[in-house]
Image (cartoon, rainbow, N blue to C red):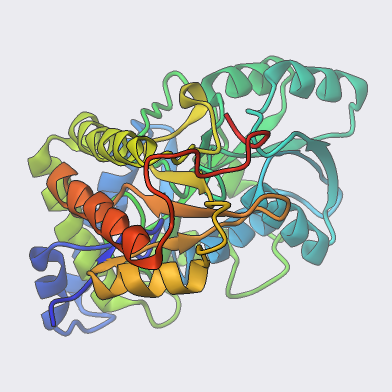
Length: 377
C-alpha cells in the first residue's frame, strides 16, 4: 500500500529527497553537522530578509515549544502581552502566558473575523503597561489570514514589540523584515518549508535577544542561552534532532530550486483553488470569506445530512489515500483540508474526487446545500 497524502497543516507530505536526507546519521558535535545547522539558520533568516538585524535560533521540539521559548525568553517577568485572538492558536498563546506567569490582555474577535488593527491601536493607547503584542499570522484552526502588515505598523507606531506566530505562513505568505517590524518570528520545520516535524526556530532581533538574559523560566527553553552557546561553540547545547535538521536542509534546497516564496505561494494557491472550487461544486461551503482565506488550510461546514458522520467519512477517505483533519471550532461542526506539502493541484483534484466517491457511498447528498442555511458564508 502506498503511503497516504497528508492534507493536514503539519506533519505533511514530504518529497522523496527530503525523506532520503534522513538516511544518513550525523554526529551532534561534528563540524559537518555544525556547518549544516549554520546553513539552515542562515537560510531561514534570509527568507524573512532579516539576516542583518536578526538571528535565527533553532530549538528541539514542535512549533509550540518554540512559541513558548520565544514568549518565555523575550517577555520579562514584569511584561504584559496583548493577544489579539480569533482562534485556537491565539488561545494557546494565552494559555502559555498563564503557565509562564506573564500577564496577558486578550482582545477577543470572532473566529470568522480577521484581527482589527484599529482595536489593537485602541488597546495599546488605553494601556501603557502593555509591552508586547503576540499575533498569530495564519490562524490554522480556521485558515484565517490576519492582516499582519497593518498590525505590525500599529504596534511599531505605539512603540511596542511584536512577536509573530508564523507557524503556518512562513515561507509562503510574503514577510519581509524591511516592511514588517518585528521582535521575533516563530515557525517550525514541519510546515510550509516541507521538512519533517521536530525543530522549531525563532528569528529574533539581536538587541532584544542580547537583553533577554535571565528572563526565561526554563533552562531547556532559554533562547538566549541557546544562542550564546551556539555562538561560542557552533553546537547545540543539548542533543539536536540531527535527522530533522538534515531533512530541513534538503527541503530548503528544494524550496530554493522551486523558486522560493513566490513559487511556493503559487503552488499552494493552485491547490487551494482546486479544493475550494471542487468542494463548492458538491455544495460545501467554506467557513471563511474568500478575502481572508489563506491558501494553507480550508475549513468546511460539515454536511447536515444524517448519513454523514465524520469518523466514517475520515476512514473512507483515508482508505482512498488521503488524510483529512477534524475541525477545531467548538460552536460549528466542521472539518479541515490542508493545501500544503509536497503536492500539487493534480493530487488535490484526486482528493476532491475521492471525497465525492466517499459521500456517494455513504449516501450523503451531492450537489446540494451541505450545511445549515444560517452557517458560514
